[in-house]
Structures are given as structure tokens and as C-alpha cells.
Length: 236
Image (cartoon, rainbow, N blue to C red; front, side, top):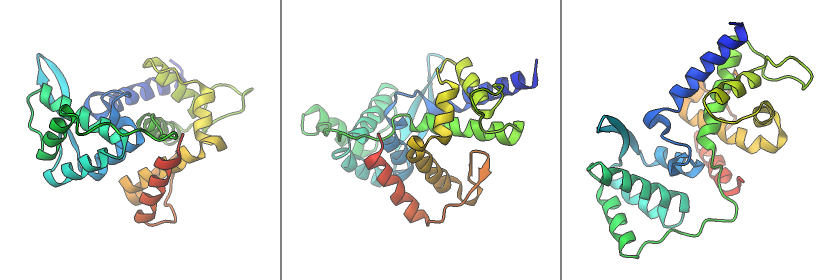
């Protein structure tokens, strides 16, 4: 195998690890929207596995106080409403306990008192979690495999963007070199990059790495939270 092929295999393995089990569940789950990702963090939602008939399923723990706040937010945010439904459905199916606030939510939905709010015309990034993973793979290719970020279209296909595209394609996700490159450098994707950087900063502090480089935004964590809320309101 060539050095490039070895790198692609390593990135494919990392992608599978990052997108397996309760770490990722499935891209279409409501907690994988930007709003859902932030809710998991803000309301201390903990995912854990329950095994039934030799298969692992995701269930959720939500502290009692945070559960009431989560439900209150669900009445004005369609993504959070979907997240609450997802948590309730998962825990009920597996016979797992639910916080009182989420039990109240389930009863109110069944009785027709709680309805999904109308989502805004402009909605948050539905692939936010996937984008986090893609940026992590790009950083890994640059730091651990000594690759350049990208290339011009006429150069040999051996950049980090090429390797990540090939790696996720091996795992059944159709992301071309051009799409990965645009995500990393296009001015039209700047808001996505900014949101991911703010999220990484909030998660990792001074140890945050983005596109192979350590960074520290010139904002406080409170300002970073505010920037993320703005992204939620304006991203397409």
C-alpha cells in the first residue's frame, strides 16, 4: 500500500469510530442538528447504551431541573421539540426512566396541549455533527500524516481534503474533494467554520485545534456562546 492509501485507511477507521454507537447514533437524529447539539451540552443530556436482544441502543439521562428547561425551550424551537420526542421515544422503548419534565412533555403531546412549533424559514446547520467530524479528520490528516490542507484542481490528489473525501467515501458517505475543500476554504462556508471553531473552543479551551492549528478566539466563552446563538438564528 502507498503512504496515501495507509492514511486513507487510518482516517476511515477514525471516521467509523467517531460515528459509531451513542457517540453519533445516526446523522438524521434530532440531536445532530446544531440546535440539538447545543442542547445536549447546555442541558447536561447524557447518552448511554442499553443492550436488548444483543443490540445496543441509545438512551438518555437528563437532570430533573434541566429537563424542565429543555421542555420549555422545545415549545419555541422545533429542533428541541424533536429532540425531546427522540429522548422520550428512546427511553420508553427500552423501559428506561424519564425525568418528570420529559414525562410531562410526553403526556402533554399525547393530549394535544404541546405541539411542535413552526420552524423559522432559515434553520440551523442540519449536518453540524458531521461537519465537526470532517474538520477533525482534516486536522488529523494535517497533524499526524503531514499533509497539506488542499491543492489546486490540477495537482496530484494527495491533500488532506482528498484523503478525507476518500476516507468517508469508503464508509458510505458521498463527499467529494470539492465539497471538503469548500467546507475548509470557501467564503460561503465561513459561518460554518466560525461556528465549529466556537464550539471547539467551548469544548476544549486553549487545547482546541482547527484545520491542524491550535487557536484561541479573541473572545470570552460568554461571547463564544453568543456567537453560536447568532449562527443558530442565521445559518442556512
